[in-house]
Amino acid sequence: MNENIAEEYIALISNLFGSFSDLNKDSIKLSHMQNHVIEFMYMKQRALNIKEISIGLDMAKQQLTNIIRDLELSGYLVKVSDPNDKRAVLVSLTPAGKETQDKKWLEIYKRLSKNLTKLSDEEQHDLNYALHKANALLKKMED
Image 1 (cartoon, rainbow, N blue to C red):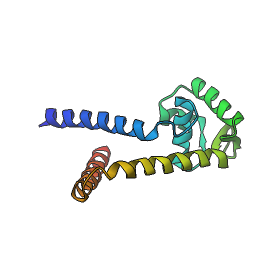
Image 2: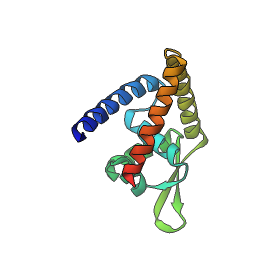
Image 3: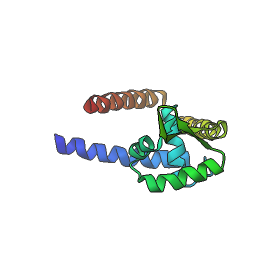
Image 4: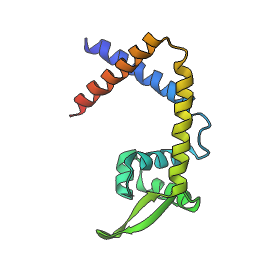
């Protein structure tokens, strides 16, 4: 049974990655790594220190520092000193950074909605249930 689950899990990752890559294509004009940082910040919805971003993205702080600098110069991020730790800085999205993600996710939603029209109502219901169930079970395995 575990082997079958592993095979389906790997197939799901591949399918989701391919589907999401198509939905996300040309939706933002940043480098791959810049997009990861902006997207991570957007999903967290709060200011983060460099260490939190580094851990969350599994990225070396040295590499992250350059990406954050470039995003700050481009007006997508802002750095301020951490009031709880004067040695650290907090990074947060600027309105322009948030707007890029708002636009990106709206475009992804539109593309997904268009793709869903290829499915019957019953198939859409099945997909909704399957995604909900997969998310709930995967979350349960984390706890």
